[in-house]
Image (cartoon, rainbow, N blue to C red):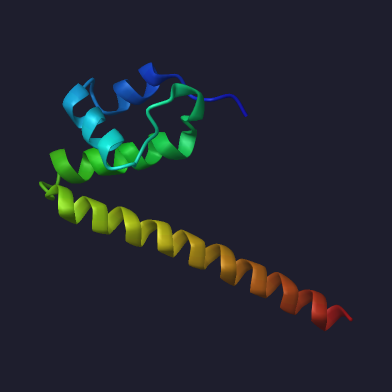
Length: 91
């Protein structure tokens, strides 16, 4: 998969370079454009929406992003368990 170009990320966060620096500093998105993925852009979009539309403070954003990541990991684990159970039932 091709890395996302930084101008795409900037467009998503409405060219707010201060917000971009905050995302970099918090480790939410990498500084190296070669490592930027669609997932990073989506997380940046969520963070931007939380701050600018819902007025969540940065500490709240970090908690929400962490919980979102944990929920996603749990969903993957449950899907894997379901897959293994179905396999076991088939013999």
